[in-house]
Image 1 (tube, rainbow, N blue to C red):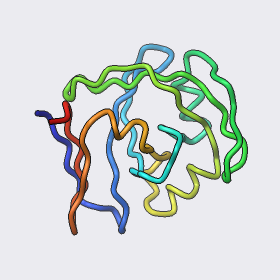
Image 2: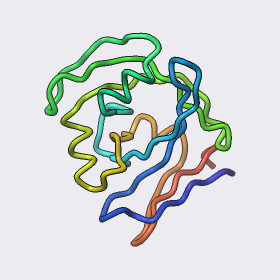
Image 3: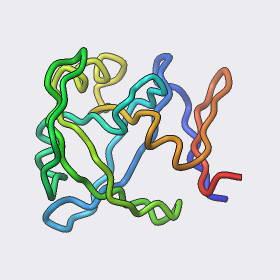
Image 4: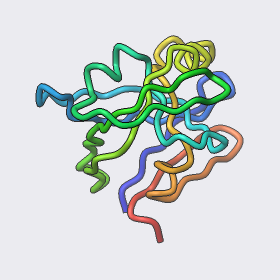
Length: 131
């Protein structure tokens, strides 16, 4: 079972995920893990513009308008190579970046549930496939 384990940054759990951009390039981004987030991914708008290869309907949340699109998760080390819905939103990305400037957004419960995740006093981990 593949696992990514990261020490908290500040008090926040996080993951580094790979994506295949619309131009075919593979890029990696650090995202706050937020189990309370109904959207699977909320990204900084410039990152979303780079990754989005097809539009998806927008939605409104407590962060304002979330601009939807399809993106490609690309994490072959986990066996997670999937097309998922993500949203671009500056306010969500700013909230994530308050915890650490490397964070470009957040990964929410719908994506975390693809695998198995957890944490303790010092670390957060994600495993795939789930047991």
